[in-house]
Image 1 (cartoon, chains in turn red, blue):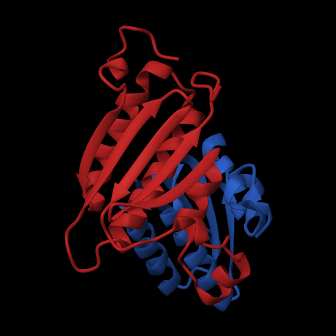
Image 2 (tube, one colour):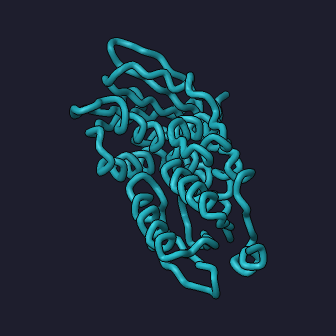
Length: 151
Length: 110
């Protein structure tokens, strides 16, 4: 729960960061998330899971959403209910809910590499959702935590 | 990410510290490839200093495992920190790798 003087409560209580879809921007995304979640004082392990889920979705966008061209990623963090991250890109349509869980034997024997990050992101958070909206892919991640309960 | 390799008889102990992610994982791949070319087939990965692993890091471990399978080699991962262990558990990764509590315990398994 946020207190009245928390910066996150300004306006809509949401914070937004826009990134270029490049690996070199990931550090900015991490710093942004850490700043945005400072008010809820998460355990390091709780923060780690949310950060990793965010990074996995961003890396997937960087690798696949904008083949051969530049693009942007918009990350919005809001609190209550839970910690909620919304990640938007305007690249090609991709529903990460449809990626099957990895078949480890296949990964090791055939050197299959895809799908790991999305699967991990889905496993790390309590709620994982996707919608296509106005030409954008919108992924939402929600984590219910003692410091930021879902109600 | 800091990677150091130390030979111990016919085995190599690779210490990885810091973050293993999309940015740093290619370094790990290159270093391992060098050791493989050098003829090393028994790897202990000392993860006691590893703070963070993403799917890119997991993928690098799968690539190493695949190369070692082809050479009849083996890899044991040692001394996972809690947060990294949790990623192994959540992903199901912990079930396909040999995991040891310490480097000493890992060496006994090779």
